[in-house]
Length: 119
Image 1 (cartoon, one colour):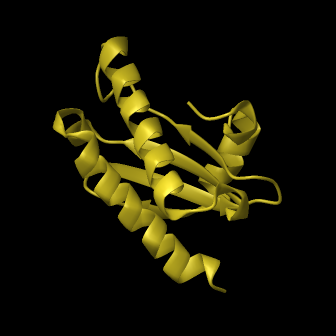
Image 2: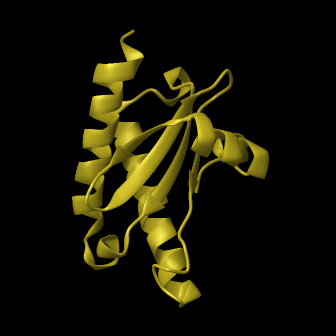
């Protein structure tokens, strides 16, 4: 779980990120991201379309949060990321190991660094 200061919880902020943010798609998730003035903020949204069972949706959220945290600890200095992220896992991610998800999240942050952070 991320610190409260790193959670994107306000519905208006989430909607703004979804409307104005850039997107990235992998086989396991979609992510929308938007430049921010504050610390980085992240949220993971899992629709009921993925699973009707809250247990499965919550498990998927936990896996994604842990994977994001692992990747950020390994590769990134969190304080330098001034972005808002909204992750949307797909149903295909339910069957995957966290290491596979880590790999795709790492690829996303690599491409983000390559295309957006260096400018």
